[in-house]
Length: 483
Image 1: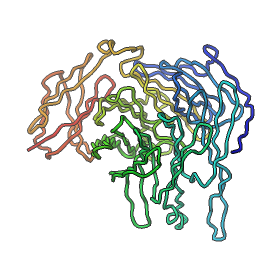
Image 2: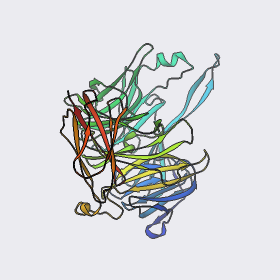
Image 3: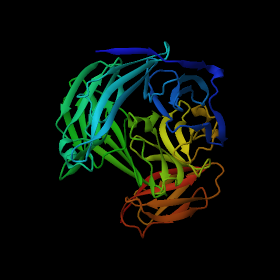
Image 4: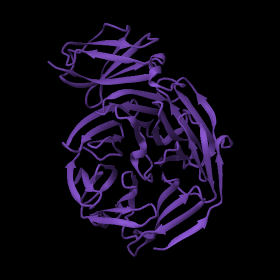
């Protein structure tokens, strides 16, 4: 296989000399470091080295930083690339180059120019690439780094063109290709099954793929189990939906999230083939979706502790620049909420696109955010959210930082529920009850820490989600009402 090597002019700044961002906003829970007036393409790089976090912040700049947003280093390249993965002090990118041509029926067809795997060595400051046979990768693709085997897995499927009915007929397969970190193809398989709107992750010995099986007269959603070594389909299960975001939580649990008009958090046990469904209403017409060109949706769910899992979205409306702010969700392994936090205090008139989330060692969250007021200029943010307050550094400090909790009982309930609150600086709050369709069915004031009694005898029997806002956070849970 032919390899091309060439030198990239690069500026590598380390430590205190790499001052690319300025602190532009800070409150008790949020700090934003910002680089203003940059192109639209800032995002999180999936880093598998133990050297902090990495993000692309403009066409030519990649930054390395720590839990407190302190800058460790900076890489500036003369040739921009959308590198997605970092491992072994190298950056990796799969690039699909193509163009459209019009056929005799005046329909556009996609012509592949090249499929290239780029890798950039930070130490030697060289970039290399190999071309991959275009029969091995389809137009729609995602790829991840396999942490156990140190390989790259690519899942791809043909594109469906709504203007071309034949494209739906021909989109009757998907492909899985495994390459090493030099771009050598190690394994490949073609599956005669339809797959669209897909995401995937690795779990134990398998690649877990979630997607939609769309035919000419039917559509269903599935999870496929593909053995990583043999690339054979070993199992599948039907699912309630396809997922914009998918991440493995442990050897038997995966999390699938949909975010359109509310937040669906589905927790699948891939061994017992059972699911726990959770739905969380948002007070906006809809929420935004990630950019389709991201290598993996894993960049949008993260955790250090499996009972403290982070997800974030932007709440939107139909106006291209109508934003209701960024909402952060933190939930347990079963998908039930620990809390949620809404931020809209800085540049509220801008659209804030979330380009990755990173759970930190101090129990916080870093968000890569693109904030823009038009389609040509934008600001790159690194937003650090600290649920226990800025300056928090360890679990022993929790009680010093306004930790809040809510106890709703009896559960199941019949005629009433009691709501007890443990929180410092409590004055007054509200409790909201939502049915399983996300409809607000009851809202009551909570005027004291203990003994708040809420009548529920007029509600239908069933499961309800409650939200209680305390000290800038929303604590949620479930309560069963019987008759």
